[in-house]
Structures are given as C-alpha cells and as structure tokens.
Length: 198
Image (cartoon, rainbow, N blue to C red; front, side):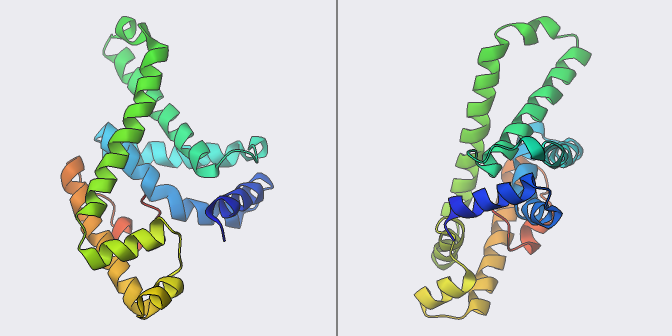
C-alpha cells in the first residue's frame, strides 16, 4: 500500500476511535519520537515522559485530526511543542524569562529547523555507515516501504534472511546512535523490526 494512503487510513481509523489502529501506530512510531526527544533533551526520563505525553495528546485530540494532514507529521509537531514547553519551564526555573521572551517566535522556528536537520543528519550518517548488504535491505524497507517478502524476492533470498539482516542493522544503528547522542537508547530499537527510524 502507498505510504501516504496507508498513513491517511491510519489517521482516519484513529480519528474514529479505533484503539487497535492507535496501538499499532504507537508501536511503530514511539521509538522515533523517543530518539528525537532524547537527542535534544539529553535525558532518558524527560524523553520518555514527553514521548508518552505526545501519544496521549494524539489520542486525546483524535476527534480533531485533519484527514488532509499526515499523522506522523502531526505527532512530530506535538513532540516539538512539548519539548519547547519543557525548555521554557527550565528557563523559568533558572530565572531566564526575559531571555526566553526575546525573539520567541523566531526561536520556535529555529528549534523546528534544528530538530529536523540534526536528527535527519544523525540518522542518515548512521544508515550510510551500515555494511552495504544491510544498508540496501534497510533502505528498501524504510525508504521504499517494501515488505520482507518483497525484499526477499527482489534480492533472491528468503524473508527470514531479510529479517536477520534488519535485526543486525537495527542493532548497529542502536549502538551508533547511542554513541552519538551520548545515551543508551532503548532496547526496543534493537528488537522491534517494525520501527520506522527514518
């Protein structure tokens, strides 16, 4: 199924209160939101709390979801807003209200650009450093959104072999991203082969 059609279908299902569709989306996308928040907050506790709050907000506001918007983009926007709120609260506690208020609008736009660019660069660097065979399979899965069976047919191998390559690729990426972020990333990055990391 086309990625945009699939994501639009998920959004419509969640909008109408389909808890199973929401649970599937949560399992698919939670780790990417967690990594984004971890990279910029440098705190596993903060990242975990904000990631959980992000998905709670998606569910709580499901009735107002716009079918013309992408569900993942909407979720990322909530995560960014929560992260900005977190930094604002830190600034208040540290008595930096005036500095925070100065150019707040420009600062928010800058934060959005930094979050997108820095995380994308970090993930792309990690993918580019994969061994060639694993990189090909990973890109076919994550960029072209092919199933393991489709990848296996294209590469003249078996779905089980593709699954093993993906598991090893995710393990490599987990270690690489942990080293770059300076924090140990959650074990589900290694175990959950449904993770949409890119």
